[in-house]
Length: 401
Ligand code: HEM
Image (cartoon, rainbow, N blue to C red; front, side, top):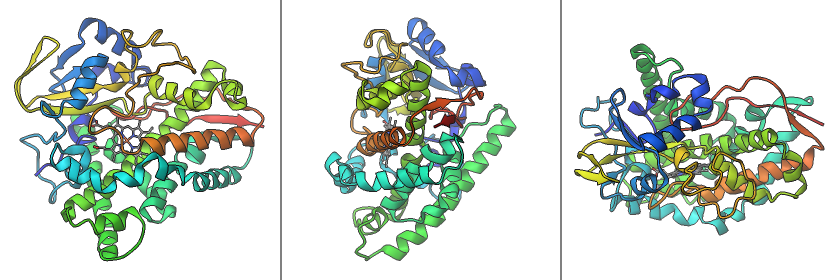
């Protein structure tokens, strides 16, 4: 049984160019270099292949017969029992994938999600009501709590425990700032501890709700007879994490990018289309920069031979800057059209939560713009989120009037 999953474990190791603050804040020069010189390359230190160009990244993400999402290493050390995340839809291939995704698909369709808009607006308004003064940290006051409260509501779990949910989620995708054997080991211990706490939390919730008639996603999972108890647990944990860390960064990266480009007022007043501008944020500063797979057989990718059983990292953040697909890829063009970004993935694992993430970002921005006449970022230095997967900043200070 696996103790690794697609969003944790050995992936805590970052490639050398991304092991420092400036590299993590701006990985795009490295991506460009790699697309030009070594678009498919092997990193000895991480024992993984890296894929940087749009077409190949799409192939790695969608060709599940050759590139499996079951990233379980053969020699994984055992934790206390199975890692539930490795039995979630994110980490399995067909036919299991369909079984694990189908039972919830309806709940996340755009129509169902649209009905949630008034509630998301109420939460966004109340978070802004709680802000004191004219200078605040957008991340802690707004872009972090908003998606957590919404996913906690969908799961019907207490929103006042959201700081704990954040600690758990962060630990699962974290990488140590300085990468040594010791920090990697500590990182792994924190990850396992968080996983156990999350598992214990949801195990109790699932037990309580089994047979119940609630409309929430924990009850839906608890009553899903085609899912094993570990799969039910994996589903709840995956949703809490996925609904939490990614959209936070989309909202923050949007304000960061609009301010940097000097277009905050134009987006706020509607001169620039808000929804299109968010799509460009998804491309330009993709909240999920990379996802991984393992080859099921010897294969060839654009002329490069890759043996069976190798790890392959698909750099979504690089694909979204590929000059063969996007004109002026390093320019932020808020009304770019077409915009064929793959920030939500490609193929059968395409993000379940994409409609929800788009709705949350749209509401977050419109409520913020309605509330204040002027919004400016301060000069405080930016610190990147320390993760090999998630891209954003830990804090973004705003001055508003
Ligand atoms: C801006 C926000 C988000 C981004 C950029 C994002 C990105 C992604 C990406 C790239 C994948 C594909 C993973 C792969 O191919 O291995 C994915 C899958 C997934 N996402 Fe999201 N996500 C976001 C928000 C959300 C939200 C809000 C939820 C849930 C409430 C969510 C739930 C999921 C789930 C369950 C999967 C697995 C789908 C599957 O394996 O079939 N995501 N996401």
